[in-house]
Image 1 (cartoon, rainbow, N blue to C red):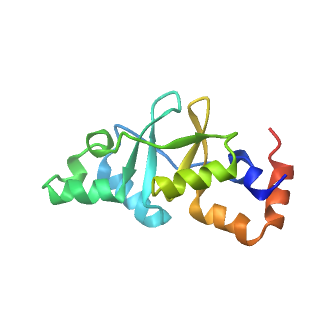
Image 2 (tube, one colour):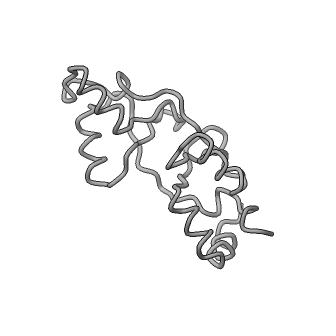
Image 3 (cartoon, rainbow, N blue to C red):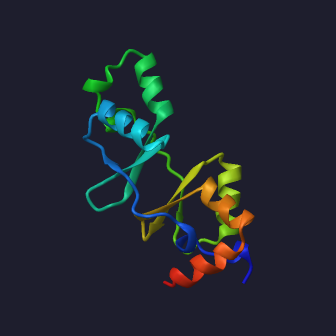
Length: 141
């Protein structure tokens, strides 16, 4: 097996910090600032991804005059979300990240959020290939 054959489940990080559509945008902005992420998945009651709230969404809302303390996540979230199933090969994850300029790719299992793979996670595998073998052993599905 080559590094690029590793599956998303072998390198994904979990658990994933997420929010719900009814939460207040300002509260999530504060969470983003303190967690050093620039986006957060928005899940429905079944754990399916229904959107992403990004720093861009928050800044755009504020620029258009919205009060983030009076705005729900659902009102301003991005609804087009690129995901990958946990069985997706690393080579495909890399292609999606490059082609769609995605820094953090949400990983799903039958539509439900199970992890995240960030560009830095991919870079770790590329720079230190032995970590791929280690992760692969511990992530048997």
